[in-house]
Length: 490
Image (tube, rainbow, N blue to C red; front, side):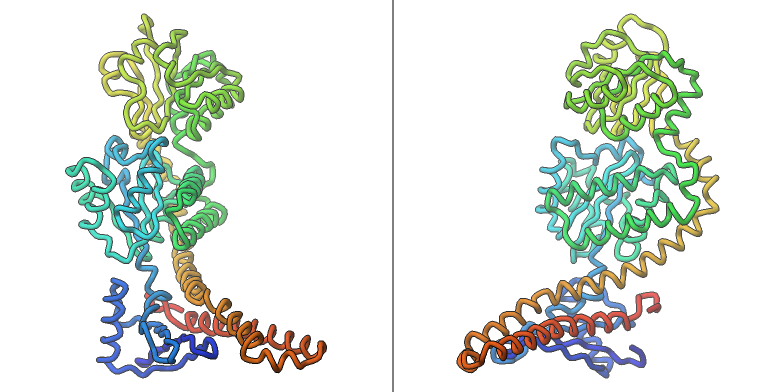
């Protein structure tokens, strides 16, 4: 709308059913300010002076309007409830990021407690080799104070929570969308163009959904992020000749001229170590021993590699020697301690290679001071990653254009979804009205009709019912289409 006009939708349920009216409200400055004040108080959002609004009113049984403004802002402003709290490689060392990683055995319990104690409506948790991120849906403003309270619910260490709150990255509204679209498309990764991240985002969402800590908003956001990432990968050359942390680690290993008959110990059989093992086998390595907490998982990978498998608690008792350790577990503390490494290496004084792709690191730093070890870890792959970024910089503009379009399309899709949710009771109410009319109000008259007349009446009521449900939805969506985005575009 233009010229100071504001379009207002009034929805109410009276004794005869649901009614939808749309009109033009010529609001003066005082009235507009009053409505915006109500919105801010009810939904804890900041309303820009140029933004239009939609007003929904409910009525009581006596047709008097009740709960005015109950749905104000639900259509247009709810997107301001989307926030990201990010711990990434830009502001934290990788060993610091590891403090926020949740191990497999306690992740579910911790996330359920975090959602309950932090008061957020929805929660999504993503952990990779260079980031730990939380997508939260909450009407509260997410600022440094909120972040400190949030981390205090997550961590036992108050000083770490305070420090993290000051250093973490915070994103809200459109910038939160841009952030997760960048993450899913690998534009925010250490290794730009690597495709593993899209799978990590999907798997993280599926786990959070199984826990019951996500709902409709996060579903829409993650769905759009994956869709956008796929568009970036297919319509640009950002992922041409794709690389990954695994492929970069292999480049480092190859530069060390490790012979093909080298003995590999694989500690952990998750997706990263599985990818690394397949990469090694593809390039001719063939001697593998796999250790994992769940023996069945270790046996599955060992079978694929023609290797052997052991449970992780036997790692310190393995004495058959090794040349290279590849480790990536979800443990929160070091898995390869000096005591375990001493048992593994025995009297062998030859220099060994350890590829540690875990965050936090699986290798205890004390091992590096006591033994001759060539360490390949995520943090020392960054020089190669920078070369990779320079090769792909020319594609970033095209990627950003795709992401801009996705943000704008998401706004409209999100608004339409809010209409659907707000009007989800309409079909139920219409059916209730129909049943009341046929079985109570007009029951006597209908009973006097012949079967043919009843069939015609039933078809007429079915037609009216469908139209009564679809027309208000269509009108509401048309209204939202007429509302400009915050950047002034329709």
